Length: 321
Ligand code: MN3
Ligand code: MN3
Image 1 (cartoon, rainbow, N blue to C red):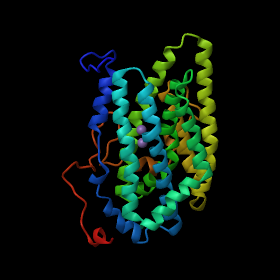
Image 2: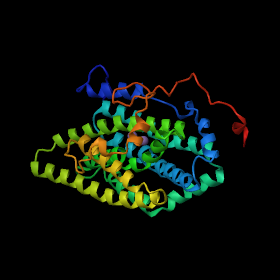
Image 3: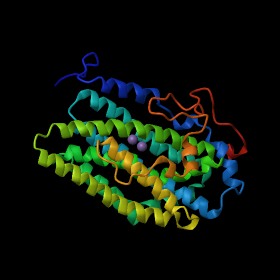
Image 4: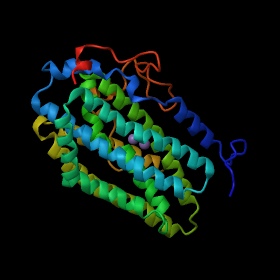
């Protein structure tokens, strides 16, 4: 067995992505979520809006649970390059941070009884579970022929495409100046996923380069499109079900299509939907691109995030057990 030697890299990109992941490390508890409690309890959201917001957080929790507990670990074990394993391991830990951060938002906004209800809802929602089982199938088949390529593409589709039907809503509210701290957490997750998607996409392309038969390469590329189309069908059902009461489904789907194109480009493939940035809801993009935040690929942390220097502001709600 070889030991991982960071003084001897066969590609600089591993060090670049390691450094970038480390630079943007963050902890959910360092964002003062309790600031959002006033918006939540002050009638800024209708009961329907709250219901959707909570269900979206529960759905996102499930996706990050899969990514942190199954997706990344199986990729770490099956990818050969030792530096790639290291980068994926760091990313894996952040998936658990993402999954946990939704609980941090939940614990601020909702009572335990409601939280239990939401976790039960997500466990029994057919569309979400189907979406998960499609992705999980590629992860559990990782040891089959070309299984690693397929698992890497499934990971990119999950992170650069499927998450966005959920990310839309918190970003939409943050863009409207509501629940800004929760929006900040989602923005940090979006920034992580954008780096993860690029790295995992590059690893997928490296896998494809190893295959000599051009017919197999073409078939694998076609399979990615089929996988994307299948998942998109589920995404349409999910989005229409979730967003029915607030009339945002079309806007959400545009955003999802825009990100599907990005996922395909991460994999070195042609865009499918050809959605331009100007066609995406400007408020949602604004939810990401506020002046206090910079979410370019090689940005530093968003300015809204202050490591180790802020603690949760204390008011009566903190002691409301
Ligand atoms: Mn994640
Ligand atoms: Mn990720």
